[in-house]
Length: 237
Image (cartoon, rainbow, N blue to C red):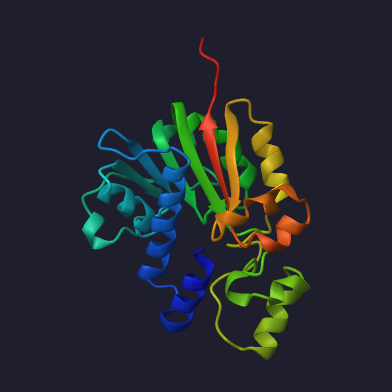
């Protein structure tokens, strides 16, 4: 179970690069257990890549990875990697091409139009390709990110109470760079996409408790971070 390790690291070091590397390595191990292989033939896309930690771990396994985000924040070690500048809320995602494996980690909750990305996901995949989607749903303990758990007071009142009583700076503002998202609504949208099938759904930081994701309402509070493995299933011709 990854969650205790993440909490210990966060208390000691905050959300540094090693914190995100722990998440990436664990997620890749989960993908491999689902039969998603990463080899020298794998063409991958790290979508909403940030500094490129997740994609960088795929590169270490031999994958040929393209990175994409609104701006190029890639770490120096990835300076020569292929990069596409794209606004996921506005630009044509089809311009990115198609891949064997697309990673979109901790991005969905920061999009004003998440349904747009969900609807375009199949178009980013080669036949039988895989899409790994994970995000922090709003009602999870970390749903408010840097003003959690005050988000349970609502996306407008919660930040105001945080600012008044905690008085610690925060980077995220609801409806500007953080948006309430819900597991149930997201899974329904994915199930209605004829080009995708859902292979696995699990709490990202404790996939051993995947049964939680079959319980509506409860999963919204206990999942912490939802991980979904999708596979392209468009009919040929």
